[in-house]
Image (cartoon, one colour):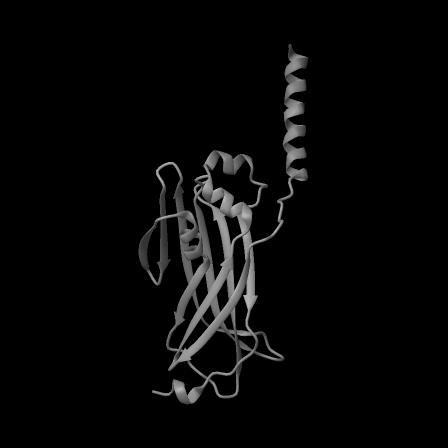
Length: 195
């Protein structure tokens, strides 16, 4: 009896570590930020970006799993010899809730300490909304001589993983996607930015 328990414990440990080392997330057609556009309006920069979801995330939403997408938008001053200097940034959190049985699709956006809920008729319109981003970087200190670029990053993770599962499977990645895209270098119009 004692030998059987020892054998079961050893087998459980071997299976645990084997699953940890053999687990490799399947990327396939990975989610990616496809476009970034921007325009300057006085001392503000309006940034638009699009995130294309991979099939796994779409399938998870169809199955009723919720997703959280964290967008980070940064305006960065390019420095040739020194490290680049972040000038202005913002974070937008979009949450996608799907209930295919009740046919309820709800998105929430948290930005600038404001939370807004939005209901959708179908899952495709919710996915399209979750992948579109428009933010304003306001009241920017401009420099005639400097070149800038905009970096947009997106990260997604599964919502509300039970704490017991999280502790047992600590080796599993917590993020499903991580995508970063940068614009080309540009100069700001200081004449337009003058008040």
